Length: 494
Image 1 (tube, rainbow, N blue to C red):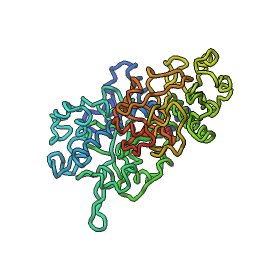
Image 2: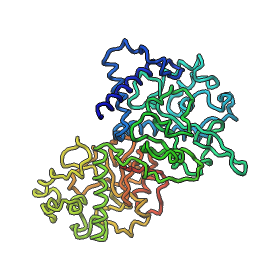
Image 3: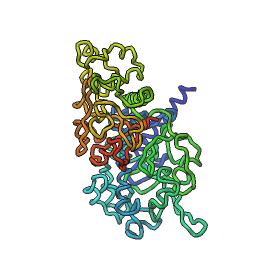
Image 4: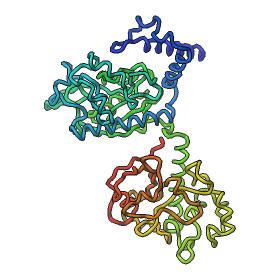
């Protein structure tokens, strides 16, 4: 039976590719008429197998989505979510209104061109946007040729580069008239007047904005057609067991496809008076890559070790007994070893000698894996560092107590992962010098727009490089009376 089932799946996939290839732009595929010769029949077998490989990558009904693939979708969704919010910040609504631009709408209350076209200026695609005639249908003689220029942000990871079809879809709904003659949207995108933040009575974090549907639900990216919000489960198409979902607050997760159809209706409805527990139907499989998950677990263990040390000695490292003349001989990383299942290595150190004494220096290359964050870094060096100096909780001498953190653990950085060029010998009692005027400079040449910070409450967050210096300074200082006002993205592995 498994062989028969797999054969049927492959035959269906081949048939689906033939249908997709045979569809003419602007038309709906007709199974009866598309089972003939495919326009791609003259292409090489290698090209055909490549398309089949792309399709098989996406359609795995019995398997969770691979973490690497989810990350690729996530990067696109982040840009789309930001574009929607930038549009809303400028125009108060998430899409143009028929009151302001009646010429943009057809007689059914639907935009003539897709929401994707209207987001182009907020995705760095102004030149492409200016070529569209927004008062004409998406498949008009003028607009139709522009569909060949689909930006990659609307392209699924396994969508061929020459395709102009997207699987990033919204759920289309309508406005219902409730008691008291008030109007209530059934989805974030009802026909007619678009929504504003005031319409999200369930909260933007409980409302679906965009999903990735199956390949059989792909449409030309300029087409305004949305998925039917009254039958959300049926509209998902042939997908994997988990569906990438962009919520209205900009957060992104992978949701199990086969949840109750009423739950799907609840999470796409902004005013159904439900606040679901998303963890109940979010994929349990990690949405981080294996390397990211390894680093996350190591950061979590170090964070716990900090608090285990504080519990024993009454303060964060270093305790007075680990200082000589109020100065450390070895780094806090060494003194956390007993709380990281590294007691044997800890016992090899001569605690009354400097980190670079003839004996202790021989232990430099025994750096535990938990302190290594870059495979290219020199063996013995680490990027796990605190901020040290006046006004920082780690001042190269005796550490702070819990009561000293008057701003609260939730508002104070414990340690960060700095850039490789800033790495230091892991046993050396040196960390990042705190400069209130330009605190991010100490982290070195960061290769990504964000760096990782572990907060004293145990949470692990991404901090943007361009965070205002004043905000980052507040987050580093532990008793300046200020709390962080800058929203930081939390790393959640599951």
